[in-house]
Length: 247
Image 1 (spheres, rainbow, N blue to C red):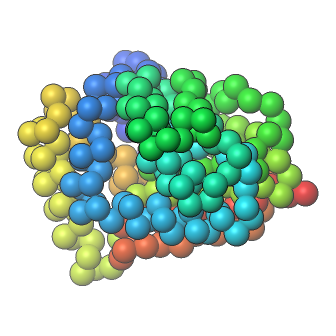
Image 2: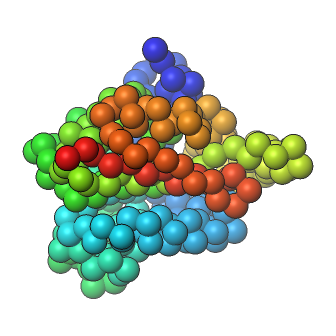
């Protein structure tokens, strides 16, 4: 069964979502970090910090950051948890180029490796990573269930999956303001900053359509993960999901 977010494409319905997502992020890569800060008023840093603290309890040594983008989460993990190695994988070479430069500037290029590849067909052996992370990326998967199956496959038994994803507030007070901000203000700012006029209209559409709460954790469970749970943050505008691969 097709999930709502899988039907939302960046540009058209004539090509695969995977192809379009790659094209979109290559296009907006130069503006991506600025827009992240602007859209969230910098709170995305706090969301990442909370997620890293949660995953740090297991002291992972070998970590995979899926849909790594420009490497913000990978760099945060490296600074905070000091693992042996982090692999960041993403469809967009344009985003990865920025991530490589940021890691080098931070003196972390010996710890973080960036790989171009498809998150729905991860080029890694089974049971490889102590922890797998995704920050603001699962709503861009063409097949979300397949993505979770792949992440479950490469996790070692006992390893943790940690997903950070934007979500829609349920509060009747917050929801109308959030809806106006995401559907009107963000696209307006995006058109001013990025040459890609469609990308920042796709963003709120994909947030509205992505599975949330128990629906998301059920997808994790269906992929063979256990201890699936979620924690809403900042009035429900972001949610951290965690799960464990059974021993």
